[in-house]
Image (cartoon, rainbow, N blue to C red; front, side, top):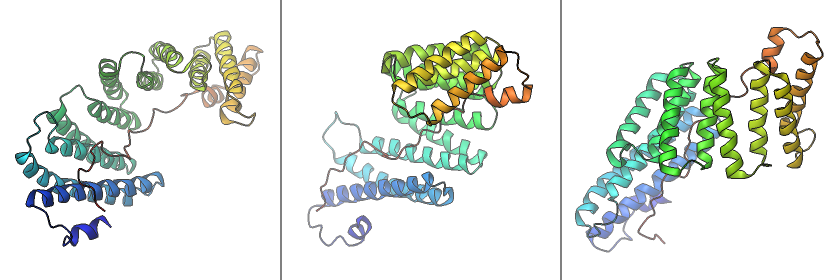
Length: 313
């Protein structure tokens, strides 16, 4: 419908500025819709088709940027952000989705090239201390994590944590997400003491954000239990697992819920060790190895906060 409206604009009878504004709005609407289609294919793991739609969305957004240049020359509202600036931020977010898709396609080189292009564009428009920049850095950290470059991953995640603390405060739930990613990367690198420190910090933030009995607090306890078990601190591990199980059951999870089942298995494993039952090192790592993978890529479906200024009927 948007493309039909763009191709046949006989219904537009107003001034050139109004036509340009409608062109801009239509490019934005088409681009946003293409991203939404791409996101559906991404979730279905049809990454080739997702990439196609994201690239088409980028082309439409770039055409909208040309309209934005003309519109900005005629604006009298000096307090509002320029349309060019908004559109360039919009394009950088689409580029993040393109890079995420390259990452899923195991094309590391193109993924990092696209992340860096998005990052440069964002810094040009909003500076270094902006949530869109932290999103790109998070994605780069996740890419490094998935390719086994753990120290580079940690560098990105720690930058994200610093930015989020500056922008959102120390008690925002996003702080817990960053701390958890740092804990996971340290654990994967075998730096268990640093992983435990980050997990304890995560626990404090999650309790403050959601309350002591939220299932997310149970999940952090689960991770602390796994870490203690790997460190040979079995009594502490059992305490953490028991707290997690109590929270999960208090959250009305059914007995067959995966979190309850895995926590009960962990408790059985630790009790078997305490009771001196024979378990091989390989079995121990299978049970208590890396407690989970880093959070996924920041993936944006609702691409932009921009609102069309023309109402199309």
